[in-house]
Amino acid sequence: MTAIAIDGPTGAGKSTIARRTAQELGFIYVDTGALYRAIGLSMLRRGIDLENPAAVESALDEIRVFLRFQNGEQRVMLGNEDVSDQIRTAEVSMAASRVSAVPAVREFLFQLQRDMAKSNNVIMDGRDIGTVVLPNAQVKIFLTASPEIRARRRFEEMIAKGMQTTYEDVLSDLQQRDYNDTHRAIAPLKAASDSITLDTSGDTFDQAVERVLALIKSRISADMHS
Ligand code: DC
Image 1 (spheres, rainbow, N blue to C red):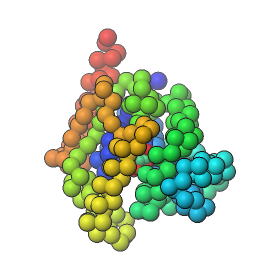
Image 2 (cartoon, rainbow, N blue to C red; image 1 turned 135 degrees about the horizontal axis):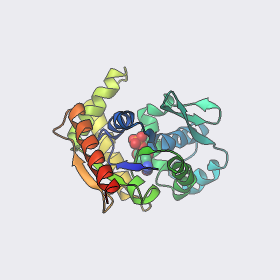
Image 3 (cartoon, rainbow, N blue to C red; image 1 turned 45 degrees about the vertical axis):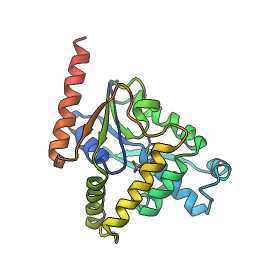
């Protein structure tokens, strides 16, 4: 099995780029952020204090999260409910960032993520895929772009979906989440030592996909010949 890890901060284009790249390669695309989001959503619905790790940990016992694939598209399930659309709000984004700092949440999701890569060729994106979840991934990419460009892309995406927001709010949310994700004690966002960093600030979406694909193909063929 081949595993490709794509990590990087919020709004670097990981999911759109990874989804397209997976289609090109015939791999399954696994968006691990969706799992943290589903847990964040469930905690919000239960009224759990997200700043209280013990409360978050004990509520985990009642949560069942898993991924389903429908026509190659990932769907996120919370028990019997498909929450793929509900997890995309700004409120759930922040909740996901908070719960992801709780070690018990990371442990809870660890095996599930590992198992996906056992029986499938995967492109998995997240924050700790190359460092923790799939340390033996054949290709590790750290995808990044400047905060302003990431906020601009995210803002346009949200407006296109009909969400009400401002660029300033998106930028400040993103900076807060960057801070949370890079400063948490466990599995913080950082580039794996054997990853390749790609800064997509100057790229269009198509250019970024091309660069990622070229890198993956050169790595995989180098692997096959070594
Ligand atoms: O990629 P995303 O924005 O959907 O992720 C939501 C939150 O989940 C993000 O703030 C950090 C967290 N996350 C994580 O800690 N580890 C991952 N592998 C993926 C996401």
